[in-house]
Image (cartoon, rainbow, N blue to C red; front, side, top):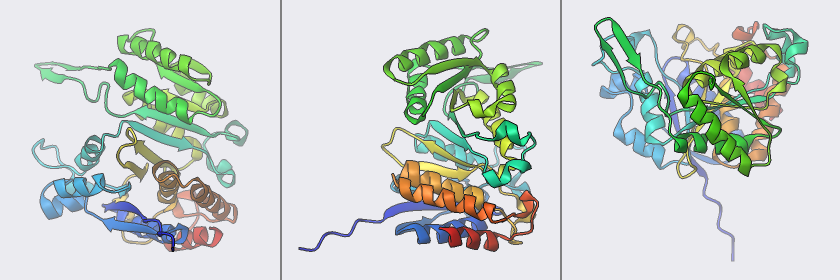
Length: 346
């Protein structure tokens, strides 16, 4: 009897806007070199607004739900900028995807490539050896609390439940190699005191060390001794701010991937941190490396293909080591040249 061939993983690709389609087609070539996948492309963001009047249709959300992983490039652009609360905005597609897929954990790895240590605004010796992961809670906190404006007074409410804190803490401990640094503002905020108490309870079941750090101190330590961190666990707004700060350790926001995960029952969402860069769309100079990094995160966290993920990350590092530099890294390599350089090293 012949063995059944394994069914290829189904990946929903969402090119979106601006440089999105260019870096998505580059990512599809890399996936082709890595293994066999079933790719299905859909509209999201501004492209979806133009076609359907909404940033994410129910059909596309359903297609994403029934896939094994979702790979998103970028959404947005001046064409869709509006202050009218009734007009659709591209970013609503991303928020609706996170909500619709039940994604509560955002992972932002920061590991400067050895070849790019001198591109960082910090001294080489400060960032050498940096390999940290920001684990940000995505669905609670001040961004989702009650808000309002009455006359000349506005309010935004920060709310967290023990259950929300516990599930993100478990993700962080599951990914830590050395320790978890939990970041809060427990000297002032009640939500942070609950955060700290809950994280301590989770840590009691785990065999990895836990340290607490106040958010203002964490912001300082990230630039003074980034190599000391392993996993940084934090709530939504602090995570939003600290992950962008950590991102600049590498010298280019154009280099960073991210993953958003749920409870494992559905697909994760994988996307580069950079925006849609409409000013360089269509001219073939977009840096695809953050998109390739997002593909590696998808292979690792979405499809349990660790060997392939590591091989792709090594290929990116080797290409940079051989001198590959796109315009955002001070060179003149095109998207095509960057893609070929990574494929040659894969």
